[in-house]
Length: 137
Image (tube, helix red, strand yellow):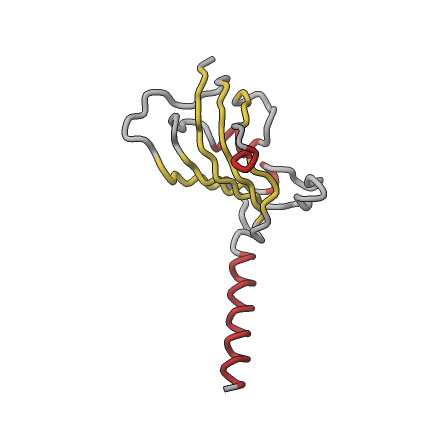
């Protein structure tokens, strides 16, 4: 019985280690569409002002920011450098109402400086983003 408990603890520890490091070697932006409306009447383009809801996490699962928890969408103009490059690039072509998962390599996020204390240097970032409103340029 004791051997089974020890074995179970080892398996859990190994699984936790693997899951927390599965994004460590990310060097390219990964964009996953989680939901896309049946009708896509308007898509995000450079220069559009968009309202988004998002939740941001580091690869170890720690949430560092959430507009959802604040209850207010975040607004920014796409392609103007007002957000990290991973957002400017990863939300292009999204439809109003679309939900995407962005896995952003460090160089398209906060890079070597990070954003202390919540985002360490060279962190891969994971965002769940919903495009709430697209205001055309």
